[in-house]
Length: 301
Image (cartoon, rainbow, N blue to C red; front, side):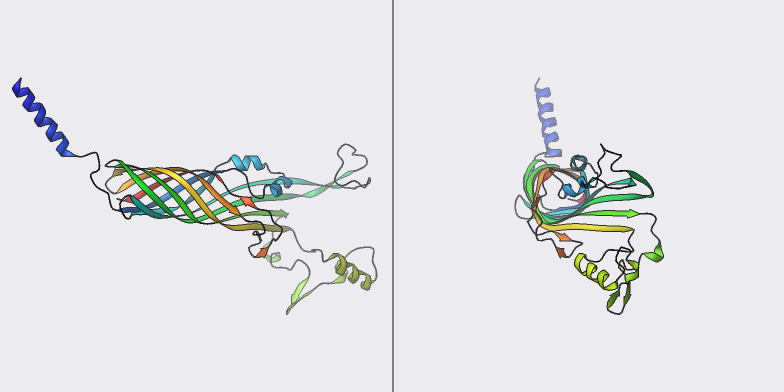
């Protein structure tokens, strides 16, 4: 019995001497790797525009927005860890619509489907292609507090803070684009610092050029050479994302991080920009919030 007891104690002692699964001191090091983040937006900014184009905004809102980017981190003082993140996410929807011409004979706005005899339809050979694309850019720093569990397993609580840019673009075109026609001006032709608009190109009931000029000055120019349009609305905002994460070092120089959190950002009223530079002063405030899940395969300690 004495021999069995001695052997058991020696085996237990040797077992604990091989590896200490609990950390005895703060770990220092860092890592960098490829990051994938999934975000489900609570609401899609600009959704009213997408509704008018025939897209299902609710479907876009429930579809995860996938971000691809990079993330790095470094242990600083004690249990505190600093890092950085950068990523881009995008999703899109598209459709092709038949074009129908109709004569509005009852002075009511829009086509009256219940009265086809009054608003008669006419066929048109071309089709309209429409594509809407959402883009989300994030660049931020991360700060975390580390709770060691085992030697190769940690739980962290932290936050991601930085600058974000959200944009959505709407592309509409008819027919097939031709390379030689892409550079033509939509109102006339360029000569020096002027756009030359020919009055003969404006068909209408007015035969007198002075009357045509007066009409154009009153109602504005109409495009005469356009088979497609691209509209982009964008806004920049401060982004904040609290999260909890788990870090598992499954190899000596390689590991996995998984985090779950909630993203929060707001584009202020009047802060939207048209095509990147024209301010839209009456634009409403838009919130960019949603649940996020982020995974990182990193290389480091």
